[in-house]
Amino acid sequence: MSKYLVNKFLFTIDRDPELVERYREDPRGTVAWWEAERANAILNCHGDECSTWLEFTDAERQALATHDYPELFRLGAHNFLTLTLFIAMFERDYAEPLGFQREYAARLSGFTLPYPDIST
Amino acid sequence: MATVAAVIASTHHPFYYRASTATGDERPPFADEWVAKIEAFRQTLTRARPDVLVMVGSDHFHQIWLDNMPQFLVGKAPYYDGNWYNEEREFGLPRMRMLGHEDLSAYLLREGLDRGFDLAFSNELRVDHSVTCPLITLRPQTDLPIVPVYTNIFAPPMPRPKRFVQLGQAIREMVEAWPGNERVAIIGTGHLSLELGGPRQFGPHGPDPEFDRKAVEWIASGDLESALAEVSLDSLHTPGNATHGFMDFMLMMGAAGANVKADYTDSLDLFHTMEAYFTWYPNGADAQ
Image (cartoon, rainbow over all chains, first blue to last red; front, side, top):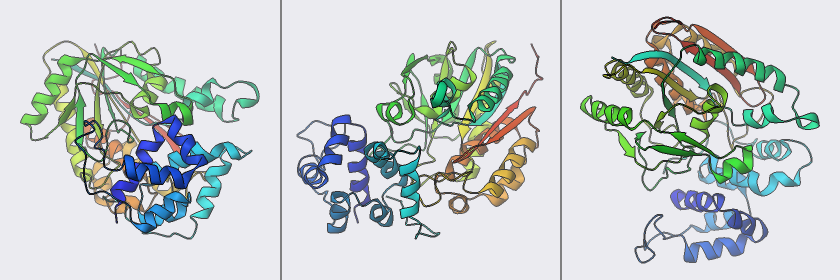
């Protein structure tokens, strides 16, 4: 498990308007680019001072590449990060206020307490 | 010595700004009642005539991130910019700038460290809606200097509820011992039951109305004993997966004092989560 890295992906995409759109339109390509180019960047550090060891598991890569937010929930991605980014990408596609948020809840309805652990 | 002019605890609903400023078809049906309640709540701070505001909140992964995660952090800067791109995007919040009060920040850091709280600090802090929402509701003119205090209610491992209470007690004592004549309001915001990114989110009410009823009673009556007996890091998962924000309410209960009844209590049952508003006047509402 590399929950930290999944969260780092969600965090860094969510705070960048261009990356939000890029991830919406091309999830698999964005995940591949990000893992190759950005996953090991230590935020606030010079480009030469990167980590060397961070990579997604196959399940994490696939969940991100298919916008599979129920699977991200199952994997223990931080619930707030996932929700915020997916609202940014998909709320616009729903006519009713909170339509996407309610569908999101419905698609997670199979989960009961205790939820997957979000500790990193 | 400084005077604690008011202790104020509330929820921080990021949709208030948009709901309260919307007009015509955009204005939700509950907006007028909500605005009336907020304006009455705002009056409880105005009446206290504060000079400086200690603002307790929690960064929602904006500036504070998992590569460098403080449990408790005090801002010490001459200014604080407020709100972030994704808060503008999702909630329609405006960009804001607040004055800081560096002397009180420095004092709380020094005294807090000496009292056994290993407080982190920030000299360049962009605050998020946990600080800006209570300013929008309670002091929209943002004319008073602030001291932001951030807590970790977001990323496990977190301090236990008792530690939040202890920090609230310490903030109250430290402010009361601060040399000076300022009137200080201690304001903190958290959540009642709340679910975000889970199956119980965005329902017609908060995810656990029974927890909310009990929580409002604990806060309004200052019943720290019951709150501490029933609330743990584990138990807070049950009312909703974002309910750890209730620990900021517990911090404020510590600041208000055990068994001290709130002088003002109000609540509003909204979609998604319950709003709740509390004010204490430790020295009386109109004390000099």
